[in-house]
Structures are given as structure tokens and as C-alpha cells.
Image (tube, rainbow, N blue to C red):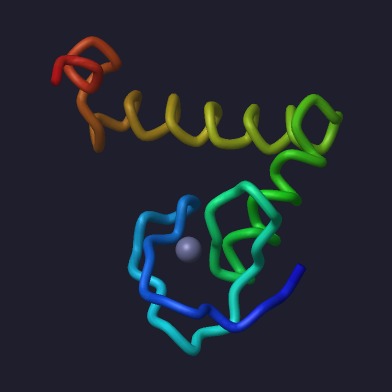
Length: 82
Ligand SMILES: [Zn+2]
């Protein structure tokens, strides 16, 4: 549900601060999140495994491959090397 934060805390979704008095989404037994964060999270959860989600992933991967080929990004090996 949507409530006004009673005390300072940290958004479990984005990790940023929630100040007392901010409007947040909260469920009993779970940490509060910003309203926007909760919506983005819910949408991602909803679209996970759907064709739209896979299309989005493919588009990101295709774009990434394109950049690697154009040598604008390091190859995959070095990207994951941290
Ligand atoms: Zn947040």
C-alpha cells in the first residue's frame, strides 16, 4: 500500500534514502520502496519471461554486439573481468 514514511530508511529497490514524510510503497513485513521503484520492479517482474521481455533483451544484446564490432566497447572477456 501507499503510505507516508514514518521514519528514515533505505529503498530496498534502488538503495537510495527514503526520508520520513516521503510517499512510499510498503507491505507488512517488507521494507519500503519509492513508489516509482515499486512500479518499475513490478513491471519488470510482470514482463519477465514474456515475448516483450525477450525482445527487449535481444535488442540490447544486438546493440551490444554492434558496439563491440565497431570497437566502441571492449570485447566480452574484458567486460566481465572485474
Ligand atoms: Zn527507490
